[in-house]
Length: 243
Image 1 (cartoon, rainbow, N blue to C red):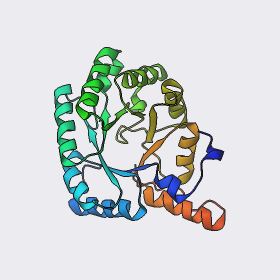
Image 2: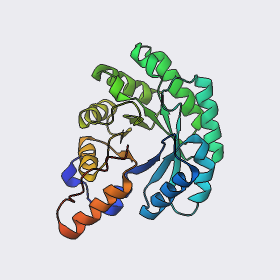
Image 3: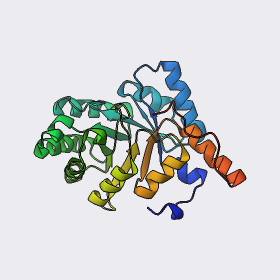
């Protein structure tokens, strides 16, 4: 996507954001505060821990903010049967999108048939529900990113996604561009991990991202408001506490 053509408005930016609420140590009150923030900023969706889906769906009912969750998170090493069961439970609890972690070990082994079968099983279980496949690009070579993107696309995934945010590396513009070139225009590309400010978000959009995973929604949308009011970038910089 041409960054110059992307309208840097609150509506356009919030429509990209899956607000991440995934840290394992978050308490129920922490989760509620983040859910309320997501509702206040009217982001596209939240991405919560599987055990929080039913609560999040109830708390966000009527806000217009969707509830997504993660599958096989964060390592991707649970069995396919467990990923399918986790997916079905998430859907029953009210999830409207699923972000599954590919079998990273299988990817690193070059066992692309196994990777694709794992993804396809979740896609089949999800039915019409959007499935995004987390590649965990920090662990992969460029050739592996290409092969993993193709496997996810062949299995019917709606999106390929860079990262969990918990593997010591996040999205890069170079990886987003590579993923976009690989999957073409009809499959979504989600940048997640390390998107902590508006400039980084715009860099990812320019590289080809069509969705952004971040816990820095307040900072990003605050920067959008500042830019609209002043015509200049905010001096706050990135929210270094986010992921």
